[in-house]
Amino acid sequence: MRVEESQLKAFILDAGLVKPAALKRAEAEAQSSHKTLREVLLNTGSVKEEEIKRLEAYILGIPFVDLSRETIRPEVLRLIPEPLARANNIVAYRRDRNELEVAMLDPDDLQTIEFIRKKEGVRILPRLTTPESIQKVLRQYQKTLEAEFGELFKGEEKELLQAKHDAEQVASGGMPPAEAEELKKLAEDLPVVRIVDTLIRHAILQDASDIHIEPAEKEVAVRYRIDGILRDAMTLPRRIAPALVARIKVMANLKLDEHRLPQDGRFKIETPEYRISFRVSILPVFDGEKIVMRLLPESVKGFSLEELGFWGANLERVHRAIKRPTGIILATGPTGSGKTTTLYAVLEMLNTPAVNISTIEDPIEYRIPRINQTQVRPDIGLTFANGLRSLLRQDPNIIMVGEIRDNETASLAINAALTGHLVLSTLHTNSAAGALPRLLDMKVEPFLIASTVTAIMSQRLIRRLHGEQDTARLTVAEAAGLKRDADLDEIFAFLKKEKAVEAKMTPEKMEWGRPKKSEACPDGYKGRIGIHEVMEMSDTLRQLVMKNATSDDIEKQARNEGMITMREEGFIRAAQRVTSIEEVLRVTSE
Image (cartoon, rainbow, N blue to C red):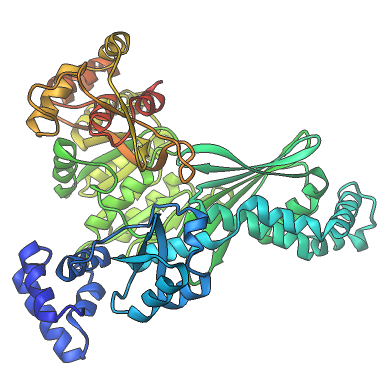
C-alpha cells in the first residue's frame, strides 16, 4: 500500500498544488540529494504535510482525518495503550459498536492493526492522518487535572503544610535576612514544582492562551482562558499560595522578597513537542499576589489570511493594499482580537529575500525567521517612537510598529510611509472607520492621514461550532431584532450570489447553527476564527477625512462603497453554520 513517486507526482500536478516547472526542479533536487520527492517538496515548503497526506489517502483509497482540534473520549483513547500508540504512531478516536476507527501514519503497519483487533475483538477501520494530529492526540493520554491534583495532595500534605509555614515566615519578615534564601528553597520543593508543572502542562494541553492564579481568603482559584473565555480549571488550598507565587517568581527571575509592587517577567519551556514562552505578570491584591501567565507558542506555524478568516472582497482588499510599496495598513480592535497575528500573517507573505523587514514590538509574541524584531524597553528609553526612529536608519522596506499610542509614534509612522516605506501597525478602536478620527485626536494633520493610510482592517475573534450541531429557525421576534443590527436581505443576497444558500431561502426559513453540548466539547464550541471589516481608502473617504468627518459618516460612505461590517460578516458565518448568531452578537456588541 505504498504510494509510488510517479503516482504522487501525477496527483500533485492534477490537484494544482505545485506548478510543473517547480515540480521538475524538485525532482532534479531529489535525484541529486538522494531524497524522495515528498521530502524535497516538504523541506522547501512547496506543499504542506496535510496536503501530501490527503493526496496519499486519496490514492490509497483510505479516508483522511484531521484530529488536531479533536478531543477524544478517554475510554476510546485508552483502547490502545499509550506506549503502543507512541511507538507505532497510531491512536483510537471513535468506536461504534463492533468497529473501531484508528488514525495512523503508516497504513502498512498490519501487525499493529491485527494486535488491536485481537485485543479488543472489534473490526479495525484505519484512517490516514498527519504527525501533528498524532502528537495532539498523544498529549490527551494525560490524566485529568482533578485526578492529578488528587494524587499530588494525597501523599504530600505534610510537605505542603511545612511549605506554607516557611513561606509565611519569610513573607512576614519572621526570618532573619540570612535565612531569606529559604523562600528560594521553598520554590524548589518537589510538591510545589509538581503543582506548577501540572498547571502549565494542562493549560498547554487545552490550548489555553492565559493562566490566571487568583488568591482568595480561603482558597486559590486557577482559571484558563480558552477560545477567549475564562474557565475554572482548579481550586487549590489557600495554604500553598505563598509557595506557588515563589515558584513562579523563580521561574520568571523576579524578586522573591517583593510583595508590594507589581512585577513582570518571562520564562520559556521547551520539550520535543512544543516550545512556549510565558509572559508573567504579578500584581499585589488584598489576599496576596495574583498571577497571570500569557502563553506564547514559539513553534506555532504561520497562518495564511484565509486560515485567519479573510475571504471574498475583504481578502482582495488586503491583497491590493499589501502589494503597494508604500503606505500605512492599520489593524484595529480591542486587546485579544488577533490584530498582531493578522499583521504577522501579512509579514509572512511579504517576507522574501528582496526586502528588509524590521519590527518594533511590545512584546515580541512570535519569532519569524529573516525578520528583524526589536522589543520595546521603556525602562531604558527604548519606546515605540525612539525604536521607530532608529529603525528608519536601518534601510528597511517594510516596518511593523506594534501599536500607535501617541502623536510622536503616529507622526514617525506617517513620515516613514511618505518617504517610501510600507508601514503596518495597530490601533485600539472598535471599528475600521473609528481609526481615522482616532488619528485626528492624536493631532495628526488630516492631509497626512489622507495621503498615507491605504487600508484599515478591524476584527474580532468568534468561537467555531464544534462537532454535531443543533439547528433552529429564527422566531418572528428574533428576525425583527436581527434586522435592526444588520441588513439581512443584503446578507442573503450575498449568500445566494456565492451559492451558499438556496435561491428561495429567506431569513425566516433559514436553519441556523446552534451549539450542541457534548462530553468532548462542554459548550459546543472549539477553536476561533476572525470576522473582519476592511476599509480601503478611496478618494471620497479621503475627502471626508480632510473635512474632519465623524466615524459614522466615514462608515456610512464605506458601506456605500461595498464594505461589509464585522457584524454582517458574522451573520454570514452564522448562515454558513461556522458559528452561532448568539456568538456573533456576544462578540460584536459594544
